[in-house]
Image (cartoon, rainbow, N blue to C red; front, side, top):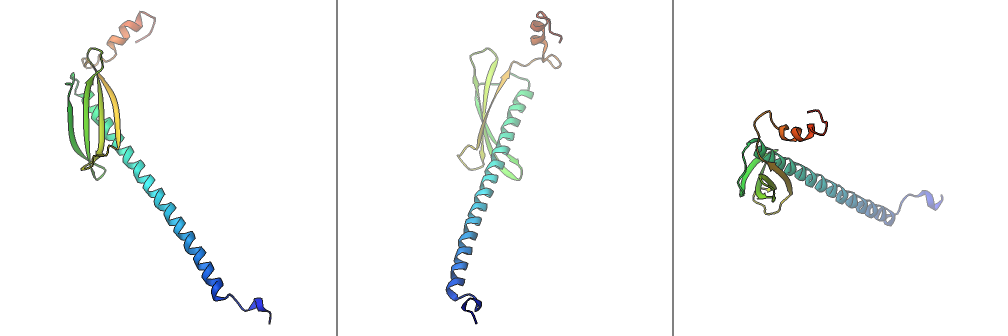
Length: 142
């Protein structure tokens, strides 16, 4: 009988198992990194949406905002989030900058900060009235 026909030796089996173990460990580590990246991306997306919602709420209030800082918490996607909105002047009359920072509740790490601008409120239905009056003189149709 040929010596190659007898099967694997214990040493060969141990080497093969070691290679398989290292391969599975590397695959598990890669999968863990992918899951962490997906979770971080989800948190950044939700934080961005929360910040954009806060800016939209300030715009929809249709009042000139006070130069101030406000904060609060919101339950979004089954998670508690903290937000902080800072309204500051821009140097243009009745035009304000709003920076909204969002983090997980109880954390000091800001996941996302979104900046928006709020202008002077106008009567309902008149949002483009000022822009159109000047644009009509240049031939624009409003």
